[in-house]
Image 1 (tube, one colour):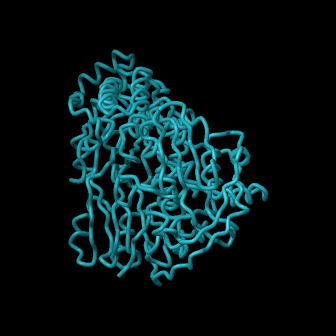
Image 2: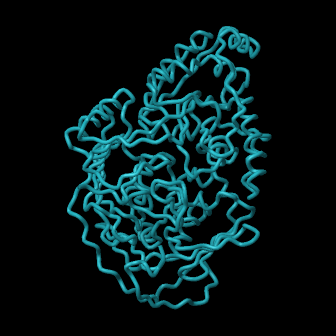
Image 3: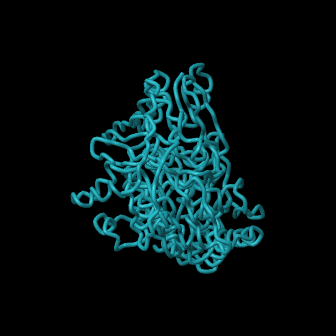
Length: 547
């Protein structure tokens, strides 16, 4: 979309010389477009869990991304809805320097921040907001960061905390990032939810009021929906944004998340018309949904991976022989049949086969109880050991029934003398504790974020991400050197070779066991229009309406 195609068509501004990151906006004289008239429709989404908050820079799961990033916010670069391709977002275009170290973003004019009961913006989006968003994550001494010191797992996991040398506003509508070394997937990375653009004016208001943490409770962005209220374990309410900068894509005046943990109850609500979209059906319910004449069931091959992670910093899981023994004593075929019920495929690699760079030559170790016992004996555990296994409290396509999977693993491992205690926590607590490395073994998974092998091998297994989404807490230099080298070149053939070699090391060292890839099913009412499955997992409502 170009500036000329937007609703706002006249704008005057001056570009003073800038020597600091501060941007003067006193001379901007916007000509505002009239607010759109939205269809008087209410769309209800039966979601599966309560978000831990709306400050999506500090989270890594689709619960927060659905409720925050893709409703309230935008990013400089966006993924085209329903696609893995990137397109302009709050930056209408960008330039990359010949050496690949500088990215200059030319920002969109006339974009309004949302007006809420707790914030009334006095200016439109500009370079101040983009600079603030990233400086907050980059600089631990940044005032807002110091006032509300939260972790930024994706920003660290992707190596951006180390690699961004400078972010500067060249003028009110131009922002430049300077990197220390080439980062081939940089544009895709900053299209991710963690890079959602905040209002520097709003955060300054919160800082002055001593309420910096309210950014997590009362979000303000430029996105298609305006946050109104949140009752944990009950509802989230949004209004359609009549001032949204993309014309004609907000199709409802109200969006409600009806938080419904039980998938059977979600389905009943959908059938009764109490919601029009629901998350994550049980595999056993898929046939019934398909048979219901009032419902539709779009589906896609999932860009996902369900895993069993081993915390390699804790004994005896620090011993590769123990990890190999646990890995080869898992009956994956039985798990696929019972847990996924026809909607899953056995996983071998640390990323799905649809991802470029996938090493097709790798094979699972044969299921072999006797050899597993021998490996445990060699490792010094002839009688086995006790192990705590964490089971997810929520459904995901990559793991539709973690409790059942945990019980099957408990039975498998009992055959080699490993006694398993199964525990779980509320989802937000589960993720928080897992990031902190409190677990021993853990059921978790991943849906790709930006279509690059680095998103799997770097984020799930790299040394930069051991305090984030590397749930195995595995930092292995021969592996890490390969993925770091692959990230630092734009030579696709070399990147592919590095990633292929890295997968061989992964398979030998077994920091986690890949369990399954799954098909994603999305039940919706036939009254819903414009819905697309997001290949990266969150549920989006841009362009979604009702007949």
